[in-house]
Length: 181
Image (cartoon, rainbow, N blue to C red):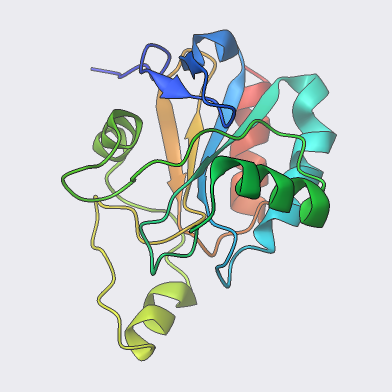
């Protein structure tokens, strides 16, 4: 059974209660983000992808999380300012949420349940081990900037490892395939 993400309650980065139903009929790339991570420069590529594909029906949704080495310590206002000033982020950002463990937000519970395995496990997993960390195993989110692709019907159709960037052919091709449907 396919799980739709549209009805799960979320908060905007301004603190307003909402759901993702406003994005029904769009292709979504949902990303857990952080401002003080080695992967933070991915904001640039995500914004570039958003600018290129928004008119074609792509929405990138950023969900800041402080779950990984406290790499998102700021308030929602701090996060929004950081993203705007440093990366000119125009895609929607949401309130900070937990994406792993028992306190995991229902959105991330649905995402990880729908697609338990990541595509493209790159060197990041090994890097975490080399740093003396114990990486989360699937279905848990590995780290900041893991990406979930949701089709126009609200079904999770792909999941990409944190070090797979927005310009990677695997992400671009998957997005193009969903946009063309």
